[in-house]
Length: 341
Image (cartoon, rainbow, N blue to C red; front, side, top):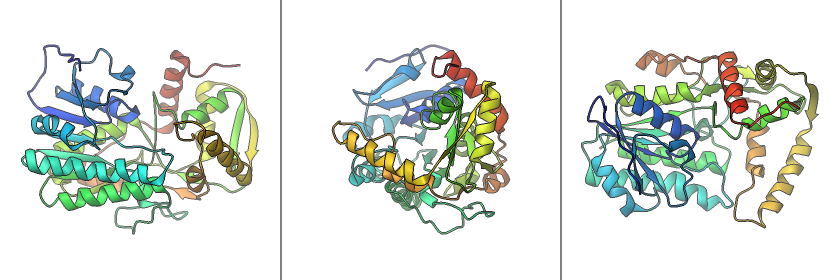
C-alpha cells in the first residue's frame, strides 16, 4: 500500500486507527495528525480512501477479522483507536464476526505482541446499552439491554474489551447518534428537509441525544491521553436531550428553507423496511433500511448523560445542535450532497 509521509511531526508517538476510512475514523485521523501523531491506518483492498487522500499517514493492508494482518501495525502502535465495525449486514452472524470477534482478535494480538501499549480506545455505541426511559437518560451504571443484532454484537465486543482490560489499558466510548460532515445515515433527514419535507415518525414524541463527530473524536483522544480513563465506559454527547422535531427544526433553520410536515406512520416505515430488505436480497449489499433499524426507530428515547466523562476527564463539547447543523449543512452543500429545489 502507498505510504504518505511528510516532515513536521511534533512527536514520535504512533496511533493505529481501525475503521479509518469511515465517517468517524477519518475525522479521528485528521485530529491525530493535527496533534502531531504518526498515524497508521489498517485498510482493506476494497476500502474507499476518498477521505484519506493526501493525508500524512501510513496505510497498511489489514482487517480486524484477519489476525495475521494485524500483527505488524499493532506491534508498532503506542495507541490504538478501535473504530472499525459494521452497522449494517445481511445476516446476524456478520455483525458478531466483525463487531465482537474482530475486537477479540485485535486485543489478542495486542496482548501477545504489544502488551505495553499506552492506551486502547474502543469505540462502541449507545446501541450496546439499549434505549432509555423517558425523562431518565442512560448512564454507565444502567443494566444493558440491547435490542438489535448491531447493539448485541457491539455489547459482545465491549465484553471482550472489558475482559482484556485486566491486562491492557482499554477505555470504552458509547456515543449516541453521531452527525457531521461525511455522515450518511442522519444525512437522509437533511436530504428530506432540503426537499421541503419535515418527517415525523409516529404520533408520539421521541427523544434522543446527539454528538457532533468533532466532539466525539476529541473525546476519544482525551480518553487515550488520560490515565484516569483506564477500564472505564463513557457515554459521549453534547449535553442536551432533543426531540426529532428539535433536530428537524435546526436542520431547516440551517438550510433556510420552507417545509411541509410529513407524518410517517410506524406501519408504513416498517413496510418500507420489508420492501428494502427484499430488494437487497437480490444484491450483495445490505438494505439501507431494514427491520433492525425499525426496532431502533420505534423506541421512545435514545437519551444519554455524559456527566461521567465530563467529571472524570474534563470533557467539554464544542458543538451545540445549532452550530453542528449549520456546519454540517454547509459541508453537504459544498460537496453537492444537498441542493435546494
